[in-house]
Length: 589
Image (cartoon, rainbow, N blue to C red; front, top):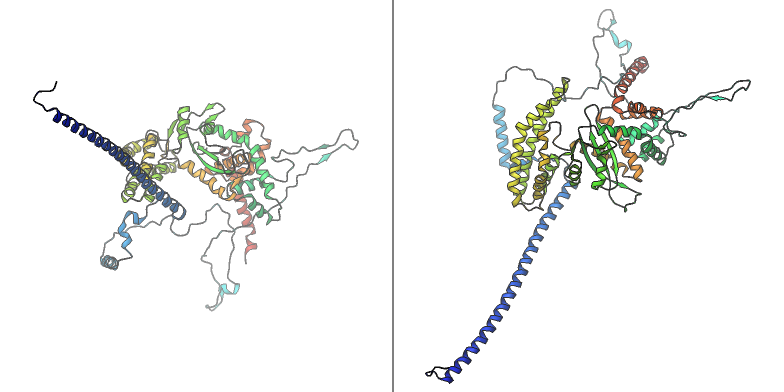
């Protein structure tokens, strides 16, 4: 009920006014809500554009870093040594400012005028100073250049008399004689009774590595050594043989290598592989190889895997073909006839090796050189000076000192070897624990401090991330004195294959790739054990066909033939020296 003192008309008007205001307020609220929604859409679009802009900037920086890295790889130096200008930027002014040159000249003049008293001392001549003498193991051919008879008479005296020989001057130079090619004519006599009581008897044919072939062990050894030791493609070996009027096409040589490497030497390769599985630790690495005929698409990557290990005097370098670099594919190289490999594994940062080590329960060690390479790339391609400075600090202040300590260990090892003793592992462990461990602990704290604030996709971020992920493997060598700090040993061995690959470019199919890997294994195993590859291959190809038992094949392993081959080489040098001494008068002018 309305109050009696209120005017109904005024009240109705008031209600109408309030209704109108309410409608206006609701419209304003609706407009404000639409404006708020529009602003939120604009803000979301702005954030999206801001994020896209940030991603574009980061991608631009990364692409510029990659372009700089590719240019450095293509045009720059391959060494990772630090430039003088990088260590001291002031050196760039040396040849640009006249004042600097004048100051240097003044300093040199002051240095020349200064006198310094030096006590008497004996200066030792450096072993590398001057031209190196020719080693004594080469046979000598003496060629005498004497005076004419009338020049050896003294004409100053009243009575001419012969001059007395008081000395001589000697100059030595290397003499090279091209190889000589001959033909082995194997004769097998046939005997028969004149009364014809029995059938004719012919001497049995000796076992040869390639029956019904014109290839002798020495020729096969020469072709194998030329391709897998000297890195010559077979067509160039064929051309070289033609210079000696031996007409052998590259296809024929390739067939010989495929048969010998793929079939004939497999008993020796299997024994070398078994010996590798007894090594306490194993290096592993891989490199791409092009295969012309395979089930994979043209241009797909195939791989050659190298494994290295073994004690001094019995080093093993083993190469194998791998169609695809999968975990299961790589795992087969750790499975032997008696089960899985039980030693320690040294590899780079490929994650598939982490999976294999976890499955086979192998103690896995990383590579400090790969970590250094990541920081070297960051120092070379980063645009920000602060990033280059930080990358250089990782190399110079942390990784470099660790390698200097390893250099001290290497020098100690060489010193002990001169005494005929191995360096005790306790000494190595003590040096690493006392010197390397504190440096690496500071390095880890430095990485953990920088990692959160560094863009993960930048060159420096990738280097920090790699070191952080690999850290347990990078420092595991501190507790194992026999393990090196890096995987450089296998990197060096895979480099030899990569160098040869530049010459022969590809393999025809998977079987020829494995044959090449087998022959390359024999050559490189000889090289790391200081065995002449040609001498070993020549002996192996001659005696392997007659080896029928495991003991006979074991006797043909490279380290089992080293002493005998060294003795043969010594005897050959003695014979050459004797022959040279016998023919020396004929060489007199």
